[in-house]
Length: 123
Length: 123
Length: 123
Length: 123
Image (cartoon, rainbow over all chains, first blue to last red; front, top):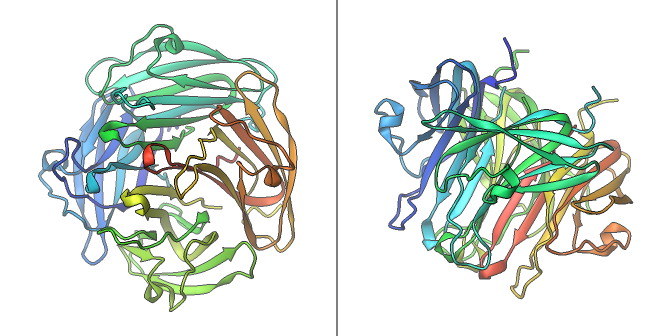
C-alpha cells in the first residue's frame, strides 16, 4: 500500500480528559485525523484503561482530503461513548487507509491555559 | 537521494491560528524549515480543512544553509493566502530537496502564553 | 517479534522532577506505558545522571491490555527508589514485550501550570 | 555500528533564545544529550540562521553513561560562542557515537512560564 499519505495504526499512551472548567476556553482533549487520500477513511478507536478492560472498537469516518478533529469530551464524536474525566487512559486508532494523526490537550485549570501535544506514534 | 539532510514531505495535522490578541507577544503559528543543503529549496504548501476543498499548492523558497520561519498569520509568507483564524486545518509541505520541518504555535489568550509544538511527521 | 504493539526500548533524555509545590495540582513527572499485548509486560528502568553512575535496573510490571502511569515522584512506583528533585536525569525503559511509552511533566511553579511532553524515542 | 544507543545526527529546526527575564526561573534553551555508551561521545554543533552563514562546528564532550544538559545561553557550554537572543536559528548535532538528544525551552515572559520541547529528529 502506498505509504505517502500516512500510516494505518496510531497510538497515544497518555490521555486524560481535564475538567471543562468555567473559562472561555474549555479544557478538552482532541484527536486530529488528516486524510490526504481521495477516498473516505474509516477509523476504529480502542481505549485502554489502568484497571478495566479496553473499550472498543468505536467507529468513525473522515472524508477524503479533509481533516477532522475528534473532541474526546463530545460523545457524538465517539458513537455515544462518554470518556470519564480525570482518568488515565490511552488510545489506539486503526484506519483502513493511511492517515496522519496528532493528539492535543488544553488544560485551563488555575485560570491559566496549558497545551499538551504529541504527534502519534505509528507502530 | 541522500537522506542526511532531511525528508521531502512533512505533515502537520493539527493547525489552528489563534487570535493575535493585545499582548506584547502576538498569538501566531509558524512552520520552520531548515535547509541544510548547499542549494535553494522550493517548498509547496497544501492546506486541508474540515469542510472545504484543500488550498494549494502555495510555493515558497528557502535558501541553502538557512532556516526560514513561515509565519502562518502573514499572507506575504504564503503568496498572499490569508489563513482563517480559529479554524481547524492541516498542512502538508513538499520540498524538492530534503529539509527538516517543525511547527510552533503561541497562544496568548487569557494574558498567559502557551506553547504548542511538534516535529513534523515525514511520511 | 510482532512489532505492531510497540517497541522494546524507549529513551527519554530530558527528565527533571519539579518541586511539588503548594497548588492543587502538584508538580510531577510521569512515564506512561501502554501494553496492548494480551500478556503482562515486565519493564526495567535505568536512570542516567550528569555526574554519577546510572541507577538500575528498577523492575516493574504492566498488565496485558492496560495502561500504567508511573509517577516518578512516587517511590512505590520505582521499587523504593527516590528520584532527586530539580536534578537533570534521563530514563531508559526496556520491556520484554513491545509497548508504547510517553513522558509527561507538570510544573506548577509561579502558580501557573506548564506541561512538557514527548513521545519516547525508540532506538 | 550498533544502533541501540541512539543515532549519530540530530536536527532541531526551531530554536530561539528567549529573554532571561527577572523571574526566579530564567528563560533559556537547552539541548540534552544522553550518552548510553561506555565511552565518551564527542559532539559537534552547527548553528543555522535566517540570513547569515552557519556557525560551526562547535565541539563538546559527553562522558560515557552520562546525560549532559547544554544551556544554549551559557557560552561556556559552546566553546565561548554567544547565541543571540530572540533570533530564529536551528541546530544540527553530530556525534561520533550513537546518542539520544532532546531540546527544551523555558519562556518566562509575562510572569508566566511556558515550556516547549521536542525530541530531536534523527536524519
